[in-house]
Amino acid sequence: MSDSSVGFRSERGPVLAAVMLSTALVAVDATIIATAVPSIVDDIGGFTEFPWLFSIYLLAQAVSVPIYGKLNDLYGRKPVILWGIGLFLLGSVMCGVAWSIWPLIASRVVQGLGAGAILPTTITIVGDLYSVRERAKVQGYVASVWGIASVVGPALGGIFSEYVSWRWIFFVNIPLCLLAAVMIGRGFHEKVERGHPVIDYKGAGLLATGLALVILGALEGGQAWAWDSAASIAILTGGFAALIAFTLVERRATAPVLPLWIFRRRLLVSSGMISVGIGAILYALSSYIPTYVQDVLGTGPLVAGFALATLTLGWPLSASQAGRIYLRLGFRWCALIGTTLILVGCALLIVLGRHTAVLTVAGFCLVVGLGMGLTASPTLIAAQSSVGWSERGVVTASNIFLRSLGSAVGVAIFGAIANATVGAGGVNAASLTVAVHRIVIGIVLVAAVLVLLSFAIPRSADKAIAEPAPAEQPA
Image (cartoon, rainbow, N blue to C red; front, side):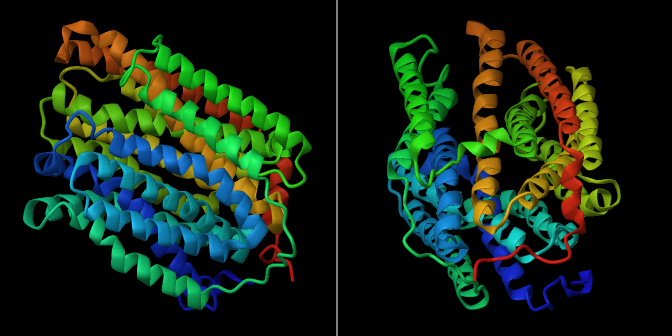
């Protein structure tokens, strides 16, 4: 099927539009709440608790992604994404009517569980409908959603908070969720031989429990409690114990929720570990670049947001062109170019000081973002293309989960570096400059590992590029 059949006017156009709208729900939500935090705190309180609005959402999403991936392969994509949209809608309504900070935090859990179903399923649907060659063009459409969201999200958050009410940053999801559900329901059709699938309830429970405890410990260790406290030790020990039990259960499970063969295939392991590194770098830059620009360079929140926005704009910009590169050079070379740009951009950040120009910071972040776009999507597409329909949901979900896991690990490691550097003397420009410098060194090391992992991508992954048509679905 030619590239001319790819687009909104093609037969698959309505499904592509529905996928983009569903992705937009998650993409906008990731950015719209940040600018509304001061208004939320002024209205319902909870200044010390507001970080949970982000961490609990990330936790719920990361824990549920592998389970939804397995459900995608058991029951098909359509029921899973409709369930996710429904949960996201319910969570949005609950957030909008929350009367205090803790009900709002609880509502973010529901939203996160919905996002955990939407994101991997939309990516899996694209993998089902389009060949690798077609996805070189389609990923430009999907990447544009994240680029637009990086600009529209913060702007909408500020507008609603200042001129209407912060509650509308959640209420605006209601018509979008309903429209996405209708478009998926009417436009997307699949044939799935469900039969009598076996559900790995024990494995799913152990995985969810283990991941929840480990990620919770990583997110809040050194923040809500000390790393050497009884609470931290108990949470992390319990989490690792549950994960060990999970691996033992999965070896004997008839239909494991997260098959261990994923970690025995070179392409899946290399692409998965690249996702871990991308998650760690992305979260570190998102957490500390705006703080550095405000507290060290003395700018306002808007300018600080601009410095980071170049990363989130560079990512979809290069992702939209990544297809041309991997079609010509292959997945490995595309990833090598991307990870090298990430390494160069991160290395440039080492020169940041107390008098660095904001435009310089933005330029360095742009280089990192361009590298991300040439790395994240192509490596995921390579992983998807190495398996059939019945395994694609699990492979996609595991890749996305590993990125979330990398973000959580990045929070723990880079947060510990920052806290150890700033110390008990309090935050000041000098100590924060040193902390950011040390964090950047850590990021550079991670980026160097990404380059090495790109070399590990097998050349056999490029065979899928010649795939003439979308992978088969069961009749």
